[in-house]
Image (cartoon, rainbow, N blue to C red; front, side):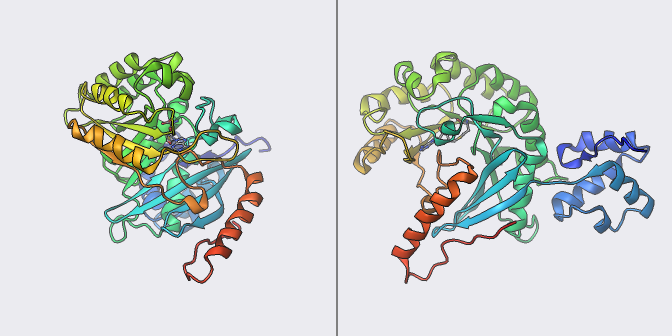
Amino acid sequence: MTDLPSRTNLMDLDREGMREFFAGMGEKPFRGDQIMKWVYHRGVSNFEDMTDLGKVLRAKLNELAEITPPKVMTEQISVDGTRKWLIEVQGGAVETVYIPEPTRGTLCVSSQIGCMLNCTFCSTATQGFQRNLSAAEIIGQVWLAAKALEHCRKTNRRITNVVMMGMGEPLLNFDAVITAMGLMRDDLGFGLANKRVTLSTAGLVPAIDKLSAAADVSLAVSLHAPVDEVRNQLVPLNKKYPIEQLMEACKRYLVNRPRANVTFEYTLIKGVNDDLALADKLVKLMRQLPSKLNLIPFNPFPGTDYQCSDEDTIKAFQHRIKSKGEFAAVRRTRGQDIDAACGQLVGKVADRTRRQAEHQSKLDLKSGIGIPVQVEHAA
Ligand code: SAH
Protein backbone atom coordinates (compact mmCIF):
# COMPACT_ATOMS: atom_id res chain seq x y z
CA MET A 1 0.00 0.00 0.00
CA THR A 2 2.36 2.70 -1.15
CA ASP A 3 0.13 5.31 -2.67
CA LEU A 4 -2.49 5.94 -0.03
CA PRO A 5 -4.78 8.81 -0.90
CA SER A 6 -3.98 11.91 1.14
CA ARG A 7 -5.83 12.14 4.41
CA THR A 8 -9.00 14.20 4.67
CA ASN A 9 -8.76 17.15 7.00
CA LEU A 10 -12.01 16.82 8.93
CA MET A 11 -11.96 20.57 9.66
CA ASP A 12 -12.80 21.06 5.98
CA LEU A 13 -16.15 19.31 6.46
CA ASP A 14 -19.43 20.56 7.83
CA ARG A 15 -21.95 18.30 9.58
CA GLU A 16 -23.27 16.88 6.32
CA GLY A 17 -19.77 16.39 4.97
CA MET A 18 -18.75 14.58 8.16
CA ARG A 19 -21.71 12.24 7.97
CA GLU A 20 -20.93 11.44 4.35
CA PHE A 21 -17.30 10.87 5.19
CA PHE A 22 -18.18 8.36 7.90
CA ALA A 23 -20.80 6.66 5.77
CA GLY A 24 -18.14 6.36 3.07
CA MET A 25 -15.87 4.64 5.58
CA GLY A 26 -18.60 2.12 6.32
CA GLU A 27 -19.17 3.69 9.74
CA LYS A 28 -22.31 5.03 11.32
CA PRO A 29 -22.84 8.65 10.23
CA PHE A 30 -23.37 9.75 13.86
CA ARG A 31 -19.64 9.21 14.41
CA GLY A 32 -19.26 12.50 12.54
CA ASP A 33 -21.37 14.29 15.14
CA GLN A 34 -19.36 12.70 17.92
CA ILE A 35 -16.09 13.89 16.47
CA MET A 36 -17.39 17.40 15.84
CA LYS A 37 -18.14 17.68 19.56
CA TRP A 38 -14.60 16.62 20.43
CA VAL A 39 -13.13 19.09 17.99
CA TYR A 40 -15.31 22.17 18.43
CA HIS A 41 -16.70 21.79 21.94
CA ARG A 42 -13.61 20.45 23.62
CA GLY A 43 -10.79 21.64 21.36
CA VAL A 44 -9.40 18.14 20.84
CA SER A 45 -7.54 17.46 17.60
CA ASN A 46 -6.01 14.06 18.28
CA PHE A 47 -8.06 10.92 17.61
CA GLU A 48 -6.22 9.12 20.41
CA ASP A 49 -7.74 11.53 22.95
CA MET A 50 -11.29 10.78 21.79
CA THR A 51 -11.98 8.25 24.46
CA ASP A 52 -15.41 7.13 23.30
CA LEU A 53 -14.10 5.91 19.95
CA GLY A 54 -13.06 2.27 19.72
CA LYS A 55 -9.45 1.33 19.09
CA VAL A 56 -10.18 -0.03 15.63
CA LEU A 57 -11.99 3.12 14.56
CA ARG A 58 -9.20 5.32 15.88
CA ALA A 59 -6.64 3.35 13.90
CA LYS A 60 -8.78 3.65 10.77
CA LEU A 61 -9.18 7.37 11.30
CA ASN A 62 -5.45 7.87 11.76
CA GLU A 63 -5.01 6.31 8.37
CA LEU A 64 -7.73 8.17 6.47
CA ALA A 65 -8.22 11.45 8.26
CA GLU A 66 -6.60 14.23 10.21
CA ILE A 67 -7.72 17.24 12.20
CA THR A 68 -5.28 19.93 11.28
CA PRO A 69 -5.86 23.57 12.15
CA PRO A 70 -3.36 26.17 10.94
CA LYS A 71 -0.55 27.18 13.32
CA VAL A 72 -0.19 30.24 15.49
CA MET A 73 3.12 31.97 14.76
CA THR A 74 2.80 34.90 17.14
CA GLU A 75 0.27 36.35 19.52
CA GLN A 76 0.22 40.04 20.42
CA ILE A 77 -1.91 41.65 23.09
CA SER A 78 -2.74 45.34 22.93
CA VAL A 79 -2.96 47.68 25.90
CA ASP A 80 -6.74 47.70 25.29
CA GLY A 81 -7.02 43.91 25.43
CA THR A 82 -7.30 43.39 21.68
CA ARG A 83 -5.36 40.33 20.60
CA LYS A 84 -3.89 39.56 17.25
CA TRP A 85 -2.57 36.25 16.05
CA LEU A 86 -0.36 35.79 13.06
CA ILE A 87 -1.41 32.45 11.64
CA GLU A 88 0.80 30.32 9.47
CA VAL A 89 -0.90 28.79 6.47
CA GLN A 90 0.70 26.99 3.60
CA GLY A 91 2.43 29.55 1.41
CA GLY A 92 1.93 32.52 3.70
CA ALA A 93 0.32 33.95 6.79
CA VAL A 94 -2.95 35.62 7.76
CA GLU A 95 -4.08 37.57 10.77
CA THR A 96 -6.95 37.00 13.18
CA VAL A 97 -8.03 39.63 15.70
CA TYR A 98 -10.04 39.35 18.92
CA ILE A 99 -11.78 42.48 20.17
CA PRO A 100 -13.16 42.26 23.71
CA GLU A 101 -15.91 44.66 24.70
CA PRO A 102 -17.92 44.82 27.92
CA THR A 103 -20.88 42.87 26.56
CA ARG A 104 -19.35 40.82 23.79
CA GLY A 105 -16.19 39.46 22.25
CA THR A 106 -15.75 39.71 18.51
CA LEU A 107 -13.38 37.63 16.46
CA CYS A 108 -12.31 39.07 13.11
CA VAL A 109 -11.40 36.27 10.72
CA SER A 110 -9.52 36.25 7.39
CA SER A 111 -10.78 34.47 4.29
CA GLN A 112 -7.90 34.84 1.80
CA ILE A 113 -4.15 35.33 1.82
CA GLY A 114 -4.05 38.87 0.47
CA CYS A 115 -6.87 40.27 -1.60
CA MET A 116 -7.50 40.98 -5.28
CA LEU A 117 -9.89 43.90 -4.99
CA ASN A 118 -7.32 46.68 -4.63
CA CYS A 119 -9.33 49.04 -2.46
CA THR A 120 -7.06 52.07 -2.37
CA PHE A 121 -7.32 52.70 1.38
CA CYS A 122 -6.69 49.11 2.56
CA SER A 123 -3.27 47.80 3.42
CA THR A 124 -4.18 44.21 2.60
CA ALA A 125 -4.36 45.32 -1.05
CA THR A 126 -0.69 46.28 -1.01
CA GLN A 127 0.35 42.66 -0.68
CA GLY A 128 -1.62 41.42 -3.68
CA PHE A 129 -3.50 38.15 -3.77
CA GLN A 130 -1.98 34.75 -3.05
CA ARG A 131 -4.80 32.27 -2.61
CA ASN A 132 -8.09 31.37 -0.99
CA LEU A 133 -8.00 29.84 2.46
CA SER A 134 -9.52 26.40 2.92
CA ALA A 135 -12.53 25.92 5.19
CA ALA A 136 -10.16 24.31 7.71
CA GLU A 137 -7.93 27.38 7.65
CA ILE A 138 -10.93 29.65 8.23
CA ILE A 139 -12.69 27.69 10.99
CA GLY A 140 -9.22 26.86 12.30
CA GLN A 141 -8.76 30.55 13.15
CA VAL A 142 -11.83 30.38 15.39
CA TRP A 143 -10.61 27.10 16.86
CA LEU A 144 -7.16 28.52 17.67
CA ALA A 145 -8.60 31.71 19.13
CA ALA A 146 -11.06 29.72 21.25
CA LYS A 147 -8.18 27.69 22.63
CA ALA A 148 -5.99 30.72 23.30
CA LEU A 149 -8.86 32.53 25.03
CA GLU A 150 -9.94 29.44 26.95
CA HIS A 151 -13.33 29.97 25.42
CA CYS A 152 -15.94 27.54 26.67
CA ARG A 153 -19.54 27.64 25.45
CA LYS A 154 -20.95 26.92 28.87
CA THR A 155 -18.70 28.62 31.37
CA ASN A 156 -16.46 31.12 29.62
CA ARG A 157 -18.01 32.45 26.44
CA ARG A 158 -15.24 34.70 25.21
CA ILE A 159 -16.15 34.63 21.50
CA THR A 160 -19.74 35.79 21.07
CA ASN A 161 -19.50 37.15 17.52
CA VAL A 162 -17.49 36.38 14.42
CA VAL A 163 -17.02 38.87 11.61
CA MET A 164 -15.54 37.92 8.25
CA MET A 165 -13.71 41.24 8.17
CA GLY A 166 -10.10 40.16 8.23
CA MET A 167 -7.94 39.82 5.16
CA GLY A 168 -9.59 39.05 1.84
CA GLU A 169 -12.98 39.25 0.18
CA PRO A 170 -15.05 36.40 1.63
CA LEU A 171 -17.49 36.24 -1.29
CA LEU A 172 -14.59 35.46 -3.63
CA ASN A 173 -13.91 32.35 -1.56
CA PHE A 174 -17.53 31.33 -1.47
CA ASP A 175 -17.65 27.59 -0.76
CA ALA A 176 -15.00 27.52 1.94
CA VAL A 177 -16.53 30.55 3.66
CA ILE A 178 -20.00 28.99 3.60
CA THR A 179 -18.66 25.76 5.12
CA ALA A 180 -16.73 27.63 7.80
CA MET A 181 -19.65 29.93 8.67
CA GLY A 182 -21.82 26.79 8.89
CA LEU A 183 -19.45 25.36 11.50
CA MET A 184 -19.49 28.63 13.43
CA ARG A 185 -23.28 28.42 13.70
CA ASP A 186 -23.82 24.67 13.97
CA ASP A 187 -24.68 23.47 17.44
CA LEU A 188 -22.08 20.75 17.01
CA GLY A 189 -19.63 23.50 16.02
CA PHE A 190 -19.33 26.81 17.86
CA GLY A 191 -23.08 27.25 18.18
CA LEU A 192 -23.26 30.98 17.48
CA ALA A 193 -26.62 32.49 16.59
CA ASN A 194 -26.99 33.29 12.88
CA LYS A 195 -27.06 37.01 13.46
CA ARG A 196 -23.81 36.87 15.39
CA VAL A 197 -21.89 35.74 12.34
CA THR A 198 -21.33 38.59 9.90
CA LEU A 199 -20.03 38.47 6.38
CA SER A 200 -18.57 41.72 5.13
CA THR A 201 -18.23 42.35 1.41
CA ALA A 202 -16.88 45.10 -0.79
CA GLY A 203 -20.03 44.59 -2.87
CA LEU A 204 -19.98 41.56 -5.15
CA VAL A 205 -23.57 41.84 -6.27
CA PRO A 206 -24.20 38.37 -7.78
CA ALA A 207 -22.49 36.68 -4.84
CA ILE A 208 -24.71 38.55 -2.37
CA ASP A 209 -27.71 36.85 -3.97
CA LYS A 210 -25.91 33.52 -3.86
CA LEU A 211 -25.12 34.09 -0.18
CA SER A 212 -28.74 34.87 0.53
CA ALA A 213 -29.73 31.41 -0.68
CA ALA A 214 -26.81 29.59 0.94
CA ALA A 215 -26.60 30.93 4.49
CA ASP A 216 -28.54 32.99 6.97
CA VAL A 217 -25.94 35.35 8.38
CA SER A 218 -25.70 39.08 8.99
CA LEU A 219 -24.58 41.13 6.02
CA ALA A 220 -22.18 44.05 6.18
CA VAL A 221 -21.26 46.09 3.13
CA SER A 222 -18.15 48.20 2.84
CA LEU A 223 -19.74 51.28 1.32
CA HIS A 224 -17.29 54.13 2.04
CA ALA A 225 -19.06 56.58 -0.28
CA PRO A 226 -22.68 57.23 -1.29
CA VAL A 227 -21.87 58.37 -4.84
CA ASP A 228 -20.22 56.37 -7.63
CA GLU A 229 -17.72 59.05 -8.47
CA VAL A 230 -16.10 58.82 -5.03
CA ARG A 231 -16.70 55.10 -4.49
CA ASN A 232 -15.02 54.25 -7.81
CA GLN A 233 -11.82 55.76 -6.43
CA LEU A 234 -11.93 53.89 -3.15
CA VAL A 235 -13.41 50.54 -4.14
CA PRO A 236 -12.55 49.79 -7.79
CA LEU A 237 -15.12 46.97 -7.76
CA ASN A 238 -17.75 49.72 -7.80
CA LYS A 239 -17.07 50.26 -11.50
CA LYS A 240 -18.44 46.77 -12.09
CA TYR A 241 -21.24 46.88 -9.54
CA PRO A 242 -22.22 50.50 -8.93
CA ILE A 243 -24.06 51.71 -5.86
CA GLU A 244 -27.55 51.41 -7.27
CA GLN A 245 -27.07 47.72 -8.09
CA LEU A 246 -25.46 47.18 -4.70
CA MET A 247 -28.41 48.75 -2.89
CA GLU A 248 -30.83 46.55 -4.82
CA ALA A 249 -28.84 43.45 -3.81
CA CYS A 250 -28.94 44.58 -0.15
CA LYS A 251 -32.71 45.01 -0.35
CA ARG A 252 -33.10 41.55 -1.88
CA TYR A 253 -30.97 40.13 0.94
CA LEU A 254 -33.46 41.45 3.45
CA VAL A 255 -36.60 40.20 1.67
CA ASN A 256 -36.99 37.03 3.71
CA ARG A 257 -35.26 38.41 6.79
CA PRO A 258 -37.84 40.67 8.38
CA ARG A 259 -35.87 41.44 11.53
CA ALA A 260 -32.46 41.88 9.93
CA ASN A 261 -30.68 44.97 8.70
CA VAL A 262 -27.61 45.65 6.61
CA THR A 263 -24.59 47.25 8.25
CA PHE A 264 -22.79 49.76 6.10
CA GLU A 265 -19.14 50.33 6.86
CA TYR A 266 -17.78 53.72 6.06
CA THR A 267 -14.11 54.54 6.53
CA LEU A 268 -13.71 58.27 7.04
CA ILE A 269 -10.84 59.69 5.00
CA LYS A 270 -9.88 63.34 5.26
CA GLY A 271 -11.07 65.42 2.33
CA VAL A 272 -12.14 62.35 0.35
CA ASN A 273 -15.48 61.13 1.72
CA ASP A 274 -16.10 63.13 4.91
CA ASP A 275 -18.07 66.09 3.55
CA LEU A 276 -21.46 66.72 5.15
CA ALA A 277 -23.08 66.82 1.71
CA LEU A 278 -22.02 63.18 1.38
CA ALA A 279 -23.51 62.43 4.80
CA ASP A 280 -26.84 63.74 3.46
CA LYS A 281 -26.56 61.52 0.39
CA LEU A 282 -25.71 58.59 2.64
CA VAL A 283 -28.87 59.16 4.66
CA LYS A 284 -30.89 58.92 1.45
CA LEU A 285 -29.39 55.52 0.74
CA MET A 286 -29.91 54.33 4.30
CA ARG A 287 -33.58 55.26 4.15
CA GLN A 288 -34.11 52.76 1.36
CA LEU A 289 -33.75 49.78 3.70
CA PRO A 290 -33.33 48.79 7.37
CA SER A 291 -29.69 49.63 7.91
CA LYS A 292 -27.12 50.95 10.31
CA LEU A 293 -23.84 52.67 9.80
CA ASN A 294 -20.42 51.96 11.26
CA LEU A 295 -18.06 54.87 10.83
CA ILE A 296 -14.43 53.77 10.93
CA PRO A 297 -11.78 56.44 11.33
CA PHE A 298 -9.21 55.71 8.60
CA ASN A 299 -6.20 53.81 9.89
CA PRO A 300 -3.04 54.86 8.13
CA PHE A 301 -0.41 52.36 7.00
CA PRO A 302 3.03 52.75 5.42
CA GLY A 303 2.88 54.10 1.89
CA THR A 304 -0.62 55.59 1.97
CA ASP A 305 -1.34 59.23 1.13
CA TYR A 306 -4.75 59.17 2.80
CA GLN A 307 -5.24 60.64 6.23
CA CYS A 308 -7.83 60.12 8.90
CA SER A 309 -10.58 62.75 9.14
CA ASP A 310 -10.30 65.18 12.05
CA GLU A 311 -12.09 64.30 15.25
CA ASP A 312 -14.51 67.22 14.82
CA THR A 313 -15.33 66.17 11.26
CA ILE A 314 -16.01 62.60 12.41
CA LYS A 315 -18.35 63.84 15.13
CA ALA A 316 -20.12 66.23 12.76
CA PHE A 317 -20.56 63.47 10.16
CA GLN A 318 -22.02 61.10 12.74
CA HIS A 319 -24.24 63.81 14.18
CA ARG A 320 -25.63 64.68 10.75
CA ILE A 321 -26.65 61.07 10.11
CA LYS A 322 -28.21 60.71 13.55
CA SER A 323 -30.02 64.03 13.35
CA LYS A 324 -31.83 62.68 10.32
CA GLY A 325 -32.99 59.65 12.26
CA GLU A 326 -30.56 57.00 11.04
CA PHE A 327 -28.24 54.92 13.23
CA ALA A 328 -24.54 55.73 13.12
CA ALA A 329 -21.78 54.52 15.45
CA VAL A 330 -18.13 55.44 15.38
CA ARG A 331 -16.09 52.28 15.70
CA ARG A 332 -13.41 53.10 18.19
CA THR A 333 -10.05 52.14 16.85
CA ARG A 334 -8.81 49.12 18.74
CA GLY A 335 -5.47 47.44 18.98
CA GLN A 336 -3.62 50.24 17.24
CA ASP A 337 -0.39 49.54 19.07
CA ILE A 338 -0.30 46.09 17.50
CA ASP A 339 -1.53 47.09 14.01
CA ALA A 340 -4.72 45.12 14.55
CA ALA A 341 -7.15 47.78 13.34
CA CYS A 342 -9.29 47.62 10.20
CA GLY A 343 -7.24 47.73 7.05
CA GLN A 344 -3.97 47.16 8.86
CA LEU A 345 -3.93 43.41 8.47
CA VAL A 346 -1.24 42.32 6.11
CA GLY A 347 -0.06 38.99 7.50
CA LYS A 348 3.35 39.47 6.04
CA VAL A 349 5.95 37.66 7.99
CA ALA A 350 8.64 39.86 6.49
CA ASP A 351 6.94 42.86 7.99
CA ARG A 352 7.30 41.57 11.47
CA THR A 353 10.82 42.66 12.11
CA ARG A 354 9.99 46.26 11.33
CA ARG A 355 6.84 46.14 13.36
CA GLN A 356 8.55 44.50 16.27
CA ALA A 357 11.11 47.29 16.27
CA GLU A 358 8.31 49.88 16.22
CA HIS A 359 6.43 48.21 19.03
CA GLN A 360 9.57 47.94 21.05
CA SER A 361 10.15 51.66 20.77
CA LYS A 362 6.51 52.29 21.73
CA LEU A 363 6.94 49.96 24.66
CA ASP A 364 10.03 51.83 25.71
CA LEU A 365 8.08 55.08 25.65
CA LYS A 366 5.35 53.52 27.72
CA SER A 367 7.62 51.76 30.15
CA GLY A 368 6.55 52.24 33.70
CA ILE A 369 2.85 51.88 32.97
CA GLY A 370 3.11 48.28 34.02
CA ILE A 371 0.68 46.82 31.50
CA PRO A 372 1.85 43.76 29.61
CA VAL A 373 1.50 45.13 26.13
CA GLN A 374 2.76 42.30 24.12
CA VAL A 375 3.19 38.59 24.48
CA GLU A 376 5.05 36.75 21.80
CA HIS A 377 5.74 33.11 21.55
CA ALA A 378 6.92 30.96 18.75
CA ALA A 379 4.50 28.23 17.83
N1 SAH B 1 -13.32 42.50 1.70
C1 SAH B 1 -14.31 42.59 2.72
C2 SAH B 1 -13.77 42.16 4.06
C3 SAH B 1 -12.71 43.09 4.64
S1 SAH B 1 -13.49 43.99 5.87
C4 SAH B 1 -14.90 43.99 2.74
O1 SAH B 1 -14.41 44.83 1.99
O2 SAH B 1 -15.88 44.22 3.43
C5 SAH B 1 -12.38 45.15 6.40
C6 SAH B 1 -13.10 46.44 6.73
O3 SAH B 1 -12.14 47.45 7.08
C7 SAH B 1 -13.81 46.97 5.51
O4 SAH B 1 -14.94 47.71 5.81
C8 SAH B 1 -12.75 47.85 4.94
O5 SAH B 1 -13.26 48.68 4.00
C9 SAH B 1 -12.22 48.52 6.19
N2 SAH B 1 -10.89 49.09 6.01
C10 SAH B 1 -9.95 48.68 5.14
N3 SAH B 1 -8.85 49.43 5.23
C11 SAH B 1 -9.08 50.35 6.18
C12 SAH B 1 -8.29 51.37 6.76
N4 SAH B 1 -7.05 51.63 6.35
N5 SAH B 1 -8.82 52.09 7.75
C13 SAH B 1 -10.05 51.82 8.20
N6 SAH B 1 -10.85 50.87 7.69
C14 SAH B 1 -10.36 50.11 6.69
